[in-house]
Image 1 (cartoon, rainbow, N blue to C red):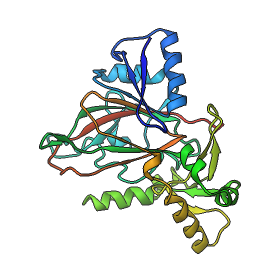
Image 2: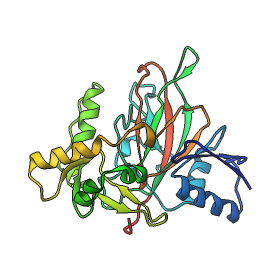
Image 3: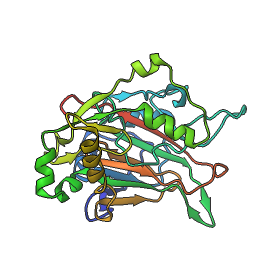
Image 4: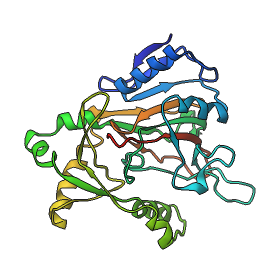
Length: 288
């Protein structure tokens, strides 16, 4: 069927022997789904999926959703969210630049956080023979396991508020863009509350569910205490023992479990060094 090679001692695996441009039998998909749940991040190198096939393949893992930033989705296949710094003939960005250059879980700011994402690399910045724009992944299950017992007990029954627009506006302004969000658009993406610890429905492992990108505050705590608690938890995110650093190659397909991982982009490339990715987003479940 295919081979599996671990990417780190903690999580992540490379899948060998599959050509994603072709359809598989049900047994192969079942094996991939099992590996996806077990390893949280799957890597398949040297792939050449068409946009249509990317969407088709992704649908075998669940229902797809269209990203809230509609201006950055593919016109032909809106399930494909575009990430990078490419522009059209008029100089308008066709993808969201430097997306996620901070630890975050995709769509944690929605009532049903996404199950995961399936991203294919098309253009990678390279300088002096070295690929740039690595993505860091961390295991939120491993982070939970590493927390002191007293801290686990403190947060196990707490909830936190997640918000999208503050981080989005800040990141766009940092990139030199003037962004204004209408009241109507804000109203369409209100704040949500989630438990700070969630049980993964497939692996049954507890996962820390706060992130520096979108977690705003802890429900029921004074502002100062809330900030201190979140900062303490954030200090565990990104520690070396829970991180897999992915160096991209053209044709890489990376699938990550959004419930048991977080990720962050390394922005070490210039705006004139082209980068372009497309990803699908697996719709979340009310169970998680």
